[in-house]
Length: 557
Ligand code: VG1
Ligand code: CO
Image (cartoon, rainbow, N blue to C red):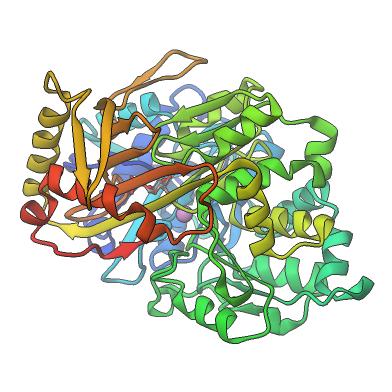
């Protein structure tokens, strides 16, 4: 088949956010919209694309298969030599990262809007990952965006027919050059990596109830991409009963579910674990990079605590036993529980802006091993994305070694380190303009002279402001700077209020309010009660209810 050059013109707004370009499906369906963005990704890699290998796959949502087909044709048109494509277009985000690294490819294109709902009326997304397996850094995404504003042509091979429903190698002659598409099993490479990292037989004995300890798990794929991975790893590899897994078929609309593993959207799992005989529950988001962990009676583990507990328990995992742990990191809004573990272990700890792309450089430089975000993201340098199933296996390895329950693990951790109470309030799909105004006004308030040192009171409890700013970050490795990463108010007792606008939504604005407060001894309280005074202060100071017209958040974590 032959290469065709198609004339096109730019679309506005093809600017990748926290994690790729995310828009409504109908936006992607506009003529040449998807083609423009894919061509711009390839153009941003100019010089390297010819004769390269790329990985392509997505979370199974509506439009993934069609877009995989477009990408295959455009890659063929641009001289890419080989594609590794997940069967039926299925690859979890951490699996893409794993495959890029294992086969040393130039990068990968991930088709996902992560935890956003799917289906024709919902979201789609395209993200480019680099040769280290991680999301492209700001410099690259800015360059991709700049290219989308100037694009005038894309190249494609319209007559190339490449089915992706069966694994195997297909070769095409594109104007005398061989173009290879290798359709791969989505799970094989990822499972091989998990076998290297963990002592899976030990986890298997726990799940099969050998050695006298009955331990029931319930693992929820939320109809997202993790289904085949869960089925293969938990049931086939580890020998857990088939009733240990639920919602394991990837559906284009996630069965109507909002595939975001939190207490609101994963309520089905929470209720089943609460009402049933389960010791452990886990759920993952649409593309498999997020995780929620709960214990018996649906005891909830805050992601910030999860990171701290795993970091403290890393010695249970062969991968960390043999390589050691170089350092820890968390995103800025994440509660500082991991910092206390780092201190105890004598490890460096890094505070980066929201979004996984900021961890990559530190990992590549060998300075960071385990990291996480409050948004149900946990990961390590085994790949360059957060990794939901890996996090669940890590938990099970720690529990298999300690013999403790999830709840007792947390209580012991808090007794030893104290507790960072944490909550996040999300106000989803608000009007954009008033939210932008609110952020400007709050920034003015907190950066005004005299704000630092002032005393703020909520519910009769007084806090003294130690510092306040709009967070900016300089990457310690390449010294690139990310500005305006969230407003934060830090009090003299270490408590923090953080407010920022989401960068993953496809329409309107989502306001996120984060509260983090440390208690050395009073560790068994209810987070909502303990944090009420600081929530009050944040709402007063920002005037959020007036700007958003919302009396209550959409989701509380
Ligand atoms: C959110 C989370 C952030 C996470 C990002 C991508 O971003 O807050 O921590 O890295 O989603 O996660 P934002 O800008 O909406 O707050 V995923 O699972 O979409 O790849
Ligand atoms: Co995700």
